[in-house]
Amino acid sequence: VKKSNVVSSILGKHWQQAPQNAVGKAFAPTNIALCKYWGKRNQELNLPLTSSLSISLGNKGAFVELTRQDGEHDIVILNGQPVASDASFYKKLVNFLDLFRPQNAMRLRADIQSNIPIAAGLASSACGFASIAMALNDLFGWQLNTTELSILARLGSGSASRSIEPGFVEWQAGSREDGMDSYAVSLSETWPELCVGLLIVSEREKILSSREAMQRTVESSALYPAWPAKVSHDLVELKQAIANHDFALLGKAAESNATTMHATMLSAWPAIQYAVPETLLAMQTVWKLRSEGLALYFTQDAGPNIKLLFEKHNVATIQSHFPQVEILQPFKKGKHI
Ligand code: 2P0
Image (cartoon, rainbow, N blue to C red; front, side):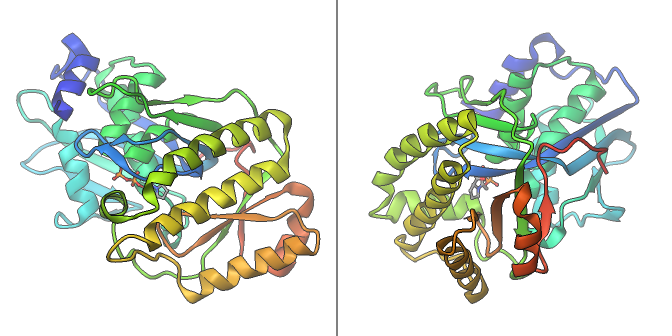
């Protein structure tokens, strides 16, 4: 099954018809996985080996305006700066847009405004592809639902499937070969007290893309066979924690999911380690503070930075121990960009 088969089956008669509107606009939040997506069963369609569960970060994400562009090339502007045509983000984006062009091969201009701290390496592809999928829907007037948008966003980047909706989101792995049952579903619960703290410990570039790292882990880690069972266990705990607002259970499940994911990578060959010394120091500080009674947990993605998890009543304490932390409230209402 090819990406274009999935697109044509979702868009039906609308596929490759001209845009209905002059401009397509959309905002998509970025998301942080509490139970991670690590390993694909299908590389082409970004179909995961397991389900995952994330939290969308409120008004932190990407706002896109898509317009038609004369000439031979797409133009991608990120925060006012043109993205070079040899940049990997440009190439990934153009490949994605190729799936949707009408027969006359119309070119597009994508003006993307992101308010995620750039150095955080915070799943920019997640909100990027989700916002592009939603803006295409607006430009072409397809009137797709969130399930269809989640499937389309996944074709750009797996984690983008989880960035269509706010709040807690579960990406259900599904089992079909064409991935039509692999999309994200929003959980209805909210948790206004919940905070995420971004701890930028290093601005170093990513050592290895998530795509390559997860593939190498699946193929060579002796620990990978234990991962799907760990995910199933953590998903049960996370849903229970969310339903009961049990912060200690949420923190434990999220932190141990992240450390287990990184353990599978460390046991890959060649070994993959996204942590730098400052990452480990931050983890040790979290563990020390927790042993002293502070309800503080962390998670870590495919990079050296740490995301702290805590509740609103502990904000002042967290700030005193981590003066450089940027605190986000996923359930706080607010304007985008
Ligand atoms: C996640 N990550 O669940 C996991 C945890 C990073 C660590 O999803 O190859 O950019 O485009 O499907 O979505 C990052 O991987 O990978 C990611 P592709 P993606 O958030």
